[in-house]
Length: 257
Image (cartoon, rainbow, N blue to C red; front, side):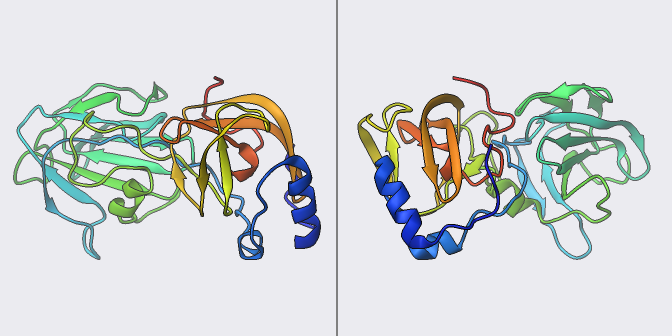
């Protein structure tokens, strides 16, 4: 179980990490300890098309135009909390994701998911239309910080943090990032063992896609003890979960290797 209180001095941290065979963090990195926050998710492209209107003070989302019937996908794993008719939208869908955020989809002519249904990242949920207050076939996409949010945040940085840039093509890229490492000189190993070969060294905080996690050698650093390791396919190895920017020792929403 990770303990959030950081009480060890930098000198003690260096000694502890050196004793376990890890590369020590710099003083600056230790000062910039990871905050306790929900995990993001590996994002998926919501739909293909041309962005005809971006987020601004009078527009809570982005509009992506394409032909009627163009598939619309969930940008991440979560639960459908709204699916039905709506004033202005004609029809809409809202999905609450595992990190607490909500994405919203409007103007479709066909909905393919229902309330309380569990969906995965990239799952087909609707087909594009021009229902409601609309001048042509398009997806109006919004991102909200929570279910209580009344104004959508800018979807561009929201999606970018999850590995998706707009405009995008569904299924054309590798999975986006779902976590970020913290610290400097963090070793990526060939297996979840401190004796395993080092395949990469991270020079600073790095956005990563964690495919799965497993138990391995216990790592002790800065008051934390953790035997969970994350496999990052893009790096070709494992990183101790201590150096993944998330308060949980075992990352939520990530399968076991």
